[in-house]
Amino acid sequence: MNFQNNSHGKALLLLGFSEVPDLQLSLFVVFLLIYIVTVLGNLIIILIICLSQELHNPMYFLISNLSFLDISYSSVTQPQLLSILAAGPSKISFAACITQLYVFMSLACTEFVSLTAMSYDRYVAICKPLHYPILMNKKVCLLLATASWVVGFLDPLAHTVVISQLPLCRPRVINHFFCDLSELLNLSCVDKLFIEIMSYVFGSVVGLPAFLLTLISYIFIISNILKITSSAGRHKAFSTCASHLTVVILYYGSVLIMHMRPSSQHLLAQDKPLSVLYTAIIPMLNPLIYSLRNKDVKKALFKLTTVNLYKS
Image (tube, helix red, strand yellow):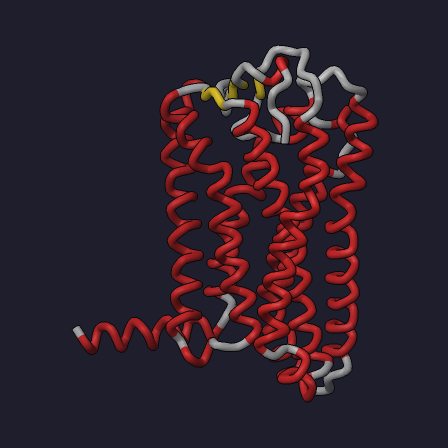
């Protein structure tokens, strides 16, 4: 990426939540707790899955991959937000801003593909249980996880290069807590409609197929569950995918609300809370959803805790 353009030489200023100065300390405490819970919660999920032999299967391997992704996703924006809340508006170089934007978009794309891989796993488990050991073996699992990261980091690359070349002609102030795409585009003199269309196109390359494949998987899953005659059987089958479905609805819902609106409907009063939802709240909720709604995880946690207490 070329950062030598004269318009890119000066640092950018991230304002964060400067419009509510009286709440800076309170917000710092809240977001610090959210970030700690996010990191610890997801690390605990990863450790439980790694240490519990009974959880060494494709579904939990993909869950651990999602937990690592959530830690990374949250860490792209939350430390900077905490710094702004503690010390006031923060300067960031254009190169660092573009890098943050690229990593953020890449992790978002990776999450789309990862959720799709998890929906495929649930589809095979419920709709083709006899073929599950063949269709979801270790090699396939590793391939799906690797593909999610490779595709996620390749898709926004060309898009980011184009954005990095845009001339900046407005005051280098970003009224956000990270280098948000829409805020960064507002600093440029280039026709915004063209850039927005390009953004939708690049975003749809991964997001649309991922959404459709996830939707199709759950159509087959729900259809198959409804064919089960016993209510106990239906409940057991649905419980195996309820946690993942909850995460899918939360993530896709927040992202669609945030990014599928015309620019004329973007209001900072709405954009920042929505950004907090999918950059901080959802990564924090994911381990809670998988632990509170999953009997195997709770059982494994209890077993590990009991063994450690007995040894001590």
